[in-house]
Amino acid sequence: MEQVSHNYRLERSGHQEGYIERLPTHVQDLRSTPPDLFKDVSFTDWASLTWNKVNRPYKVDKWAEGKKLWEQEHSRSMPVKEGWQHFNYHFHQLFSKDVPAELSQTRSDIFASLARLNVHGAGEALQELIQLLVWNKVHRVEDAIWDPRGKRALFEGLDLHKPEILFLGAADGYEAMQLLAQYPGGHAVLVDYDAFCKTDRFGKFPPQYPFLGMNPATGNHEVYYRDDFNIDFVVDDIRNLKYGQEFDVVVSIGLIEHFPDEYKHEAFEMHRRFLKPGGYAILTTPRNQLKSRAFYTIMSDYMNYGYRELMDIYQMGLYAWENGFDILRAGYIKAHNGLICKPR
Ligand SMILES: C[S@@+](CC[C@H](N)C(=O)[O-])C[C@H]1O[C@@H](n2cnc3c(N)ncnc32)[C@H](O)[C@@H]1O
Image (cartoon, rainbow, N blue to C red):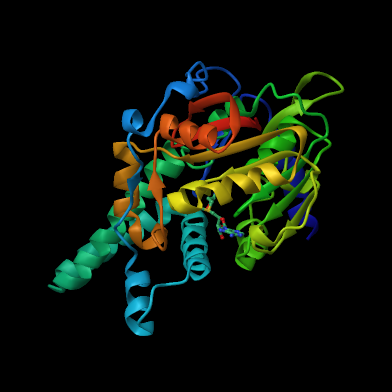
């Protein structure tokens, strides 16, 4: 125990602005210099957009084998919440992987299967190898999932002081932690109806992962860690929440694209209902780009347990505009579109 806390202190002190390191599981990136990979399209005239002009989002329809098997066994569609439990469990397996070690093990497995003329085994190992290579590129090379530089750029410059933050469908809570680093002294409520997110996705989020934020006392950057933040995790359906208008920020990361159009207004209402007057709704959704379509195809067994759209920033902005939000900032980062809005 003594050794662990000693190493932890040493590691903490090593994380300063400008630091970048590629670990076997993820990247730690505290660079604050451009390019921040935020493409800003805030100047768009949202009132002039129509669905005819922007078209409708792309619907992902390659389902996880696990979902298909479950549905055969139960003779009904997998319930939405059950789908999220499968998704969170499988997605978390990816974040836990020592990718270089697994890549070399999988390569050995392919050769071993081929040596035994086990074509089926070699095929399965080859599929695993392809998934690992994709995960390595997306998460360990491009850092496109957490994307701290893009998220910092999206979140910067807001009028927030010690904010109260509500995170709808929080999963690992990453973006609440990034917001709390940039606007320190605040408090976040993470809500997810999958208890595994509280115990594992957030509960086992690496405590040494450094978040680059601000120190309001000095006006300089400061590095924060999960345990520095004031966070409560509520396991509940976001539709059951009974808060008043008490949050400075209501944020969701990859939530509204899981609501088909007839339910979109409900999803946006959740972002409005709990906001203080003048508060910000911050939303992101995965981009409709070739890379993302390939990701959700190749990684379908990990990711695709329920309804999912891929959209562009104009489609996302039009949804927000139609649902009564003014758009203060709009743009896209590596894998997601992002909006900073206020209710109109
Ligand atoms: C696609 S994930 C968000 C992506 C996330 N950034 C991640 O890393 O997985 C959406 C999350 O919202 C949660 N969720 C979906 N509908 C919900 C609801 N009605 N109430 C509470 N949580 C919900 C799911 O359990 C899931 O963890």
